[in-house]
Length: 355
Image (cartoon, rainbow, N blue to C red; front, side, top):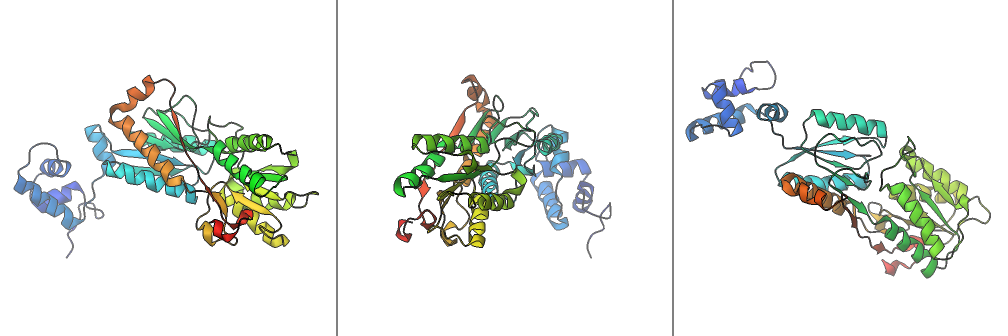
């Protein structure tokens, strides 16, 4: 028969102590690894804990001993394949170093970001990884930003080389395929409050697109640029693609600022009976999951999300283990750029063998 718990539910440290035949304070020392407990007693307590499936309350323990091993990770969209991969890579690095992670989702809003940061403060996290949507507030712990980076805050940031990535896409369409009418569908330039962090993906990629078109000597009519509200990427991309493809003359190529935007645009081309790449070239900044299985396979930049998460976590570990002062002494918090590489597939018009 299962042992009766003192609170009728989950086992407590008092239940473990009773099962091991020791005092509560002895059981607590044995479980927490603090203070002297004989090896035999410690083993008896641990065996009782295993038998009862006892799980210590890490937050309560951190409050007692004044320490925590929790790191907060703030994501704009937890359902995004990009952010999920970045989170997983960061989690592996942090857990290997003895930390556990608490992840929150801001739904790409500044107000939600502020609220979730206060939740993490209450959880007594010792550090933060933040992809900011413009709502960052300092909660007094080392912070590293990734993807979207706040100016003058934290100990550093890791971001994509957005300018180089867009240049690669535009240059390939213009130089290799001779396109002159190239349109852009991208994320918003600012958040819902009209502000943006220093490194904000939507703004950087749009600025890079305008610059790349200028460098290629190509005209860029204002009607060829469409930005999409953050919480409606798929449907927004469908509507943007529909509008672009009704223009006369219409674009012969589209650069999508994310994988979701690219796929939404691709869906609309099918509804309109426009063939990719025969009638329209389509390329994506982010590589869609299983890009080689999409019909046609999507030309894009290589997947860089895991590298982003890994580097951000390593930067945070440096701050948590004593290198924070050295980083700050160097001046402004550094932003490391992750390099990108073009992955050529058929959606741009290259033959299948190019992949």
